[in-house]
Amino acid sequence: GAVVSQHPSRVICKSGTSVKIECRSLDFQATTMFWYRQFPKQSLMLMATSNEGSKATYEQGVEKDKFLINHASLTLSTLTVTSAHPEDSSFYICSARTLGTSYTDTQYFGPGTRLTVL
Amino acid sequence: QKEVEQNSGPLSVPEGAIASLNCTYSDRGSQSFFWYRQYSGKSPELIMFIYSNGDKEDGRFTAQLNKASQYVSLLIRDSQPSDSATYLCAAPRMDSSYKLIFGSGTRLLVRP
Image (tube, rainbow over all chains, first blue to last red; front, side, top):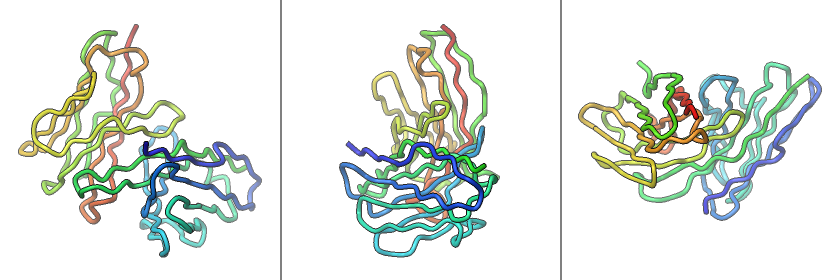
């Protein structure tokens, strides 16, 4: 249980183009999904929190107009990197939150999307 | 002060030994803690979580929580080369309990 998929797994694009990444919870409903970015040899950095049916909340320093998030259903959230530039090249990982008591909320991660912007 | 701290390693242990990974946290109010394993080039996978003081065992893994000393550790018994990975400790953020803050991770190398 608690399987999260992400698509595509790898994308290479030209500078200035937009890239959409999908994150799906396959066997549970996720009211909250998270988008992280990870640069080589660094830890996970939370970019934004995606709530079904409402606007995403972004972490400080993350441009909401550049990283568009849509959480259209309880099983799908999308991240669109608009006008991508080489510095946006990174490993983007989503996670979905399973509900339990506040002590046992857990996040399960998708397999990640490696974005390379030429 | 970072909210969750880990030694970056690498921690090198021989196959069959016990690997001990440690994590300290700054928020005394934190109630639950998570250990994730991340292989190179892959996303993190949940190993286990713990929210009570003491030990929690799951197969070869044991998580230990000491709230008074504000540390949580992960023991891996009978370490295998396939355990070689980066282990991330995570705790709820001070500003939002359902968001996690991750340590920088400890790289574990298990020598055959």
